[in-house]
Image (tube, rainbow, N blue to C red):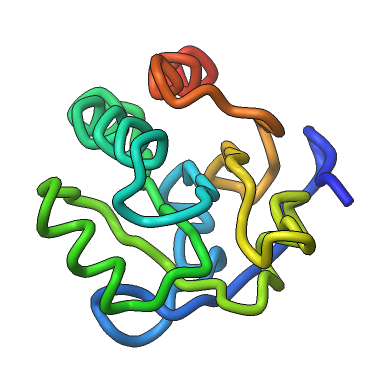
Length: 147
């Protein structure tokens, strides 16, 4: 099931690379959120996508936006991926796909996330939804919504 633009974004609380959990509610009233789901750490398309967000981080910061990447990979895999590519944002683990399912991003057949991005405003409202992402240039698409 896909979320609806203009409606409240589905809530989530997921384990993060930094330890502990990160919940969407932490950002309400404070930051916009780019929540991007991706299939697997350190694979070609996922690396291109992650690095595009990394390279656009200054522009995203200027729009009061935090980036959160989500896959079914574990925290150790996320930490290695983030270190290898100097990713300065949080990666979250969704092993069972609960959050991914609520965003229409879970692939039951493969047991992992599909490439989907949601843009959530400071009020927790879904402002953008990309159900089929092409990694190259994706950060620019996101910035266009946030500006």
